[in-house]
Image 1 (spheres, one colour):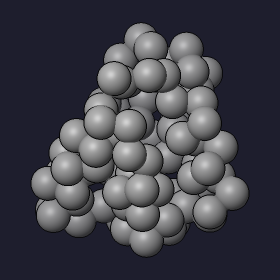
Image 2: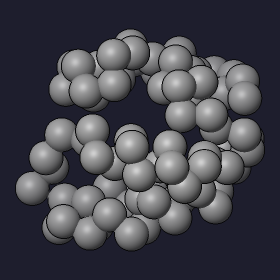
Image 3: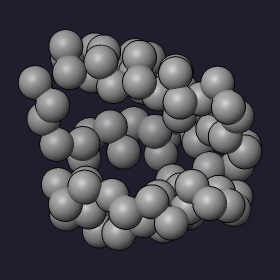
Image 4: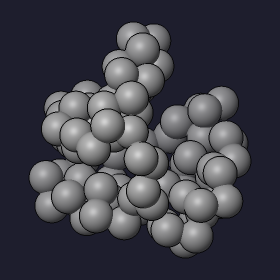
Length: 86
């Protein structure tokens, strides 16, 4: 899925190291994103990030699978690689 202008976003260095990619587009390709991000996604992503900071991966997994079309397996793999945010 082509992320358009969002695809060029450079990932923070910790995420680059964890996933072995430099941009949002490369990460989307690696995860198999199949749904185009909507304008509401930013708000939902922020809420998922706040939950991750509190140790709850549920909202992030939901966002990946339901909103971005990532397979459950790929979502679980991605979350397992995620550096600690707490």
